[in-house]
Image (cartoon, rainbow, N blue to C red; front, side):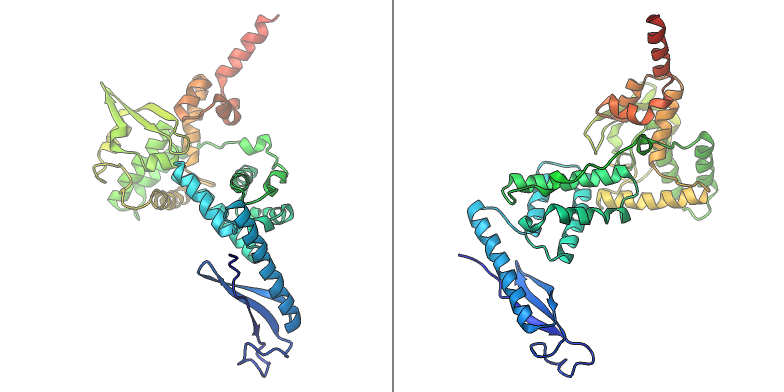
Length: 375
């Protein structure tokens, strides 16, 4: 049985129209619109005409789209609407135990896709074509400011449409034909804090009068934790107390990265461990209450970081620059890049080389030895 919604035509009269109290008046030249309910949600769209007769044709065309989608759904036993496809895809990702920050990125990307489709009056998956995705991609620059971020967003879009194709929601995958986003060496440039900037950050925490004693204590411990352990921002904020392990006279951070699941086991200075052990947050976490979402916790500390960097007079300050400082400091002291890769929790040393190769003195030494041995 086909479930076709009842579609109404109504008029949005201009303020000067003498029939503005009657939204069913057919003979004025005011703009005509369509209204219907689908899946418990009221939908509206412009008929793109001032003629009632033309609005009737737009109404029938919309009914035919629902009929086509319903027939396709009966054949394929698959959801057909964009909203249903997004819901199914996110359930698949959640069931696959995707990291919370990864899920959040997918939700944001697909919410923007839904918003674009609503503006373009696209309601069903088979209606989305390559030209629609190309037009939508042209808008991404207002949200993402690097080729790297644009490429990651396109990857999420491709994963969504690949899922829809595999689930039988669409016969052809339009996202496969999107041209690749070019990444250059400049996109992999990293900018670690200098030692002077790091020292200035710690001094600012000590002298910043607006901070409460609790904020000062937590902020100082978090900054030092990232600097000396190389943890990413989310891994540092959500670090559990049991993940600070004492081995004889040394302390180490023993955890798994939330983004990749890679194991990280790095020793840290005693003074940093002491800063952590002084914190009185709760019995499970150092910085996170555990009652809010991880996203809320990281957002709160991110705002505090931004205020701190501005107060210290540092341009383009960011938590990732502490992780870069950790890696670059090791490489500049001659530590093998493979060991640095392991300390960062990268899945492949190729990832580490992509970002940090120019700081690796050991790589240059090995290269020179290899060249000399060939003479």
